[in-house]
Length: 294
View 1 (tube, rainbow, N blue to C red):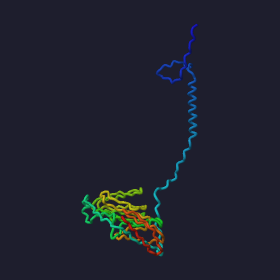
View 2 (cartoon, helix red, strand yellow):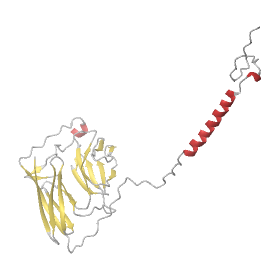
View 3 (cartoon, rainbow, N blue to C red):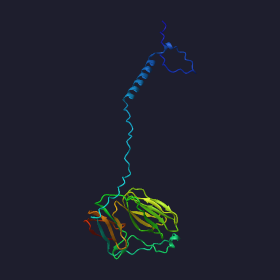
């Protein structure tokens, strides 16, 4: 008896390549791979619909404007009743022997070296125990306010290769007008430590003044000249109209104060700050005194 012939193995349903002769009749192909492909396609389609249906709806964009980071400008100070207004007067003393001023060598710039006025350090200016260049202001006890419109700017000049005055003060909202009275190039470079933007501008010899506005309180903001490293000054911006800078006699006066109790601050560039409480009675002149020591 002849052996039984074995049927040919079932062929997978592979894609046809036109470069070859596919001679296997389609009737010999198993329908199973075709059904699997159809099922896989149907399952993929169903999963796609399901995933799309489970997606969370996108939240509508928030059109609310973000709050501005710029602080609100304080209003002008209210009028003070002249029938009750008082004042604070006082002096700032230095206790001990003050170091002698140090002469500054300005020979690096011939225009500075030709200056008629001698230049010396100004960190401590003491005359008969009176301390100059101290910034005095009402620190608390009165609402913050801005300078009235039309107030003239405070002038900070560069003359003889030094800043004049060494210490200035103005009320917030006011301006500083920087002058260059020298026959040489100067630079105005502030170095704030509170994160506010610095000023860094150059001025040509005897060039046009440049004005900068200050909108927030500052205490002893350093000013430097990048061209002449010995030049330094300090800008103070008061939160209210009650401030002063002591002269060679160490004296100060804060007039036209409404009656009340205040924290009075005295700030020096190297000696730091001292605060005292002062009560101003109606129509009275309160007295205040500060003493610094090195």
